Image 1: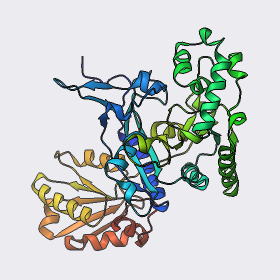
Image 2: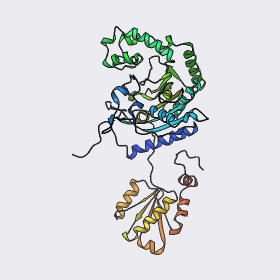
Image 3: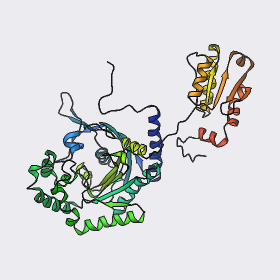
Image 4: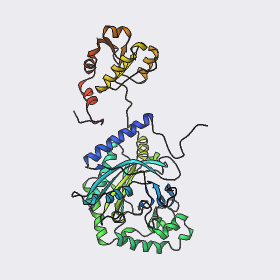
Length: 442
């Protein structure tokens, strides 16, 4: 029996990886436009970076991969989400001392959670997320949501809606928790084990239960909006006015509490309404957090962020028939007609590559017929033939596959000939330093 991937993991390869490359290019374009800087944090952190106090979230209580170092009391955890590591880094490196706050940071990378693998949910999954730390403003919430909404629109997704709610400030939240505990006290014995735990740790999280979601006690639970103080009400109203001003459609969902305990004030999700998404409809989600910077030893500063699952995003695109990556062929394939000229074939291949042409050649001394099959499979635009006589005469033959035209030219003129065969705009795309398919380097 051969080796296989662990359950809940995947190999991303072949045509599939091109979708990821396309999305990563777009991510870098959008974060550049919105003036974000990339940050890369460790794949594992000290466990208390994620397990903070009496946290009620399923992620902390059931899903983390935690391990103890041998002969040590040090406990480490593979990162299950990106925000905590970014805030830890923000404090450790004293980014709060920068003159131009807030710090606007983004990350891309793998996360690890031990949960049941299913469509759109893996044990190793990948997130693109943003964090804006060091300032608090309703319009900053709007601006952060606008980045996510604009990015998903640019990807091409149409079956989307924004769900939004407020958890209010600490005063409002404590008042609401007291009311919820009273509301659920006679029913909690009949609810799921997770809800029983949440009742003691954070009763707001009961509203997010998937098992008991249709129980009468949850359906009739008091609404957060009834217990907001005036400051929290005004903050949320300003967020909604900002979304209206930018033309971003939304729906206020008073049961939206998100899966992590650190959120305050604004919480939101962007969900796909495409039928094929099933229960994994949330594409992007996040919210504001007021206590994390101080938890890690920094000053009292607020932050807001969101993350999207790359696998979930690709699934949403597939459900809407969005083609993320067109199949691309080679610009040229060099056919080596004799083992004696293999070095010259490699030299020509290398020169074409140095001038920006996507080129390959044969390394197995295959027959002409076998090599030409590769030309067809790799959809090469130009086939270049090199034989012993060609090298003796200093001549090379290029065949344009689309028109079947052939050109015999001196070897030293190969780049000039390729430049003529490829229109000027296409060649500029080859030779610019930008990797984007929406290149503006011309």
